[in-house]
Image 1 (cartoon, rainbow, N blue to C red):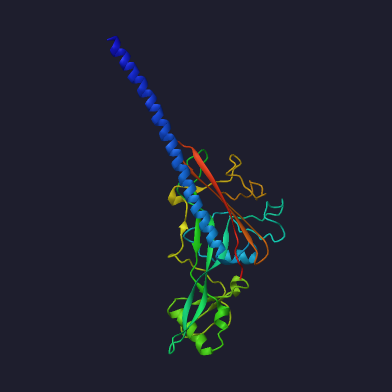
Image 2 (image 1 turned 60 degrees about the vertical axis):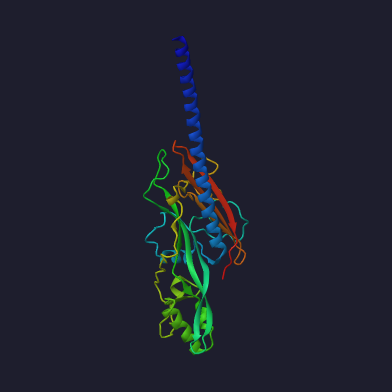
Length: 318
């Protein structure tokens, strides 16, 4: 009986040790899985945004023109997070923190990206083709969801990062530069009938002076169309890029080195980037876009894993 008792005691002790080892291993594996998920998702969206910016042809800032363009976007499916803002160009300073009292950073990125040129038929008889530059508006911004990804004290529903893309628009100046009236009319008609584009875009000026109606008869409106709604192309818009992968934008907090605001000098009670911080410096043709994205995921045990990603993109303006 003594030997049986000793054996059972040893087995019990061994079982307890094994249970602790297995629990520690599972905890470590869950934590590593959360880190891997945050790293993979964060790197993917960061470099996706960087690639989009470096293919841009016109950036918008938080001045009146930029605000009007932002208001003209059809953002019905995924509304912008209240309080989010466009950055202001800082053409006089090097890339660095804002000057107190002069907020320049933002958390909405709005620009125009060039896509594949449209081969519009200029002469049906000879099959002569004119390649017309085509542009899409791209907007990257945070939005509030109704799903909770990270559960923590005073937690909120997850904030996602949306990549929104508009329908395509041909370059009006390029079309109007076609000297032959017949060829120009054929190009316009082909853009309308075959490519489904009924508005041409003029890069300079305000939103109410930038879009010109085109008809299938080959006519280009003399005056711009005011009040244009820049519609979303649902076939190419990615929408939310984080929450579907069980990660979210991290709310700005000094509790972690990862979640602190970097360039923003605003009073946190007034404005915070909350995981998507942008600053644009340099003059036209030599701009730098600094992008700082902070995302977080959660281990099953409740531990929150934040990860920060920073890139600098070099866009080109028209």
